[in-house]
Image (cartoon, rainbow, N blue to C red; front, side, top):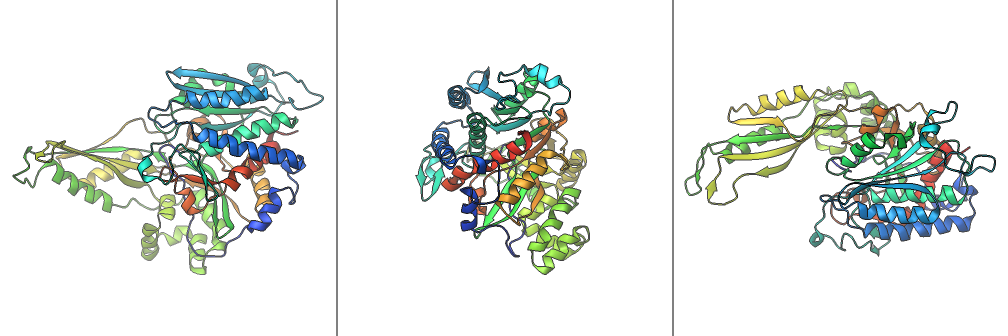
Length: 502
């Protein structure tokens, strides 16, 4: 996830709901309630799981660290499989080593009474009375990694202790791989489709989004006037063998980075200067770190906390059911500040991430700087937040300015549609009794780019993960359980089949 991180569990108390490992295995192997995958022969399902493991290892071994990205390596990986499976696809190298890949299984392509040949995108997009396509979106680049801090090489794809290890195992080569397997399942099983299913793998999500921006600008017709999109962003938190909730990302906070520069008299490090640029910067940053933006409650957060209330302690449940009243209580405000998974839902956040000054220890520089990663809730005012930070600093020799890129106002997708209903239905079959809840992620996803095109875009993850496993995203020892690699594509297949199948 570029410029963002998944929000983790809310609270640590309460009664866990979900399915036991034994019951879950019953669903995995077709012994539970009927789903689209349960109608597939068992030996076929085993083959798809085996392919998922093999392909995931191969994919994790492709180094697409961004920068520089080199995503064409991943494009070649995807294209080879899609070509072998006879799935329509196109590769685009929009810059040296950087590229996107588009693939499609056309409506009716699995039907005995429909057109077996791929139909033109433009023609299908304008047909009246046919459901619009669904897009499976993923990004191929990954963040940097320091092998010296990993138990295994980050691009080894090694299987150890029941896990598959590698950069991208949580973000988001795992989901891209599941989407690929879904395309193969749809094709091999000749699933009759009522709408096109589009697979879109893009470059550069972790840095500048040039892959998505280029595709929307230059190949928008290939999106087929899509109605739905599934991307990263959701989470299914697993603890003590139980799934606490299935969180579907319906909206995200937006990024608003700030650059802080302190100015002062330069000189030799042997003569301390209280008003030096580094000293001024430290004082300013201490004020900023101590500052807390106002608490506010979005409707989706209110809904999410109300849904989670039955699984919390009596005191916390009461607070969640009346969150607007609770945030006025000073004790609860202090609890919020200690719980990062709750705090990001209720306020704009400011994190100190980068600092710089002199390049020599014995030189006091004329300037010292820092970068702040600011995340603003939908509906927030970046100008008001910037003004507040400047007031907090209150130093004419310290400037605070927006940094790198334009501010994009956050957006939402509603939940009253076929895709959200399918996610709720399928999740209920795999995780009986577990609440399926709309969720806000702590930062940006590329859903923000596609919603303005009229596409209802959700973050949905077909894998479960513990808090520890999920927190390896962008961290050391990133890994995913092999059992999840084997099962995840089935869940995603059932969602896609429910939305696109005839």
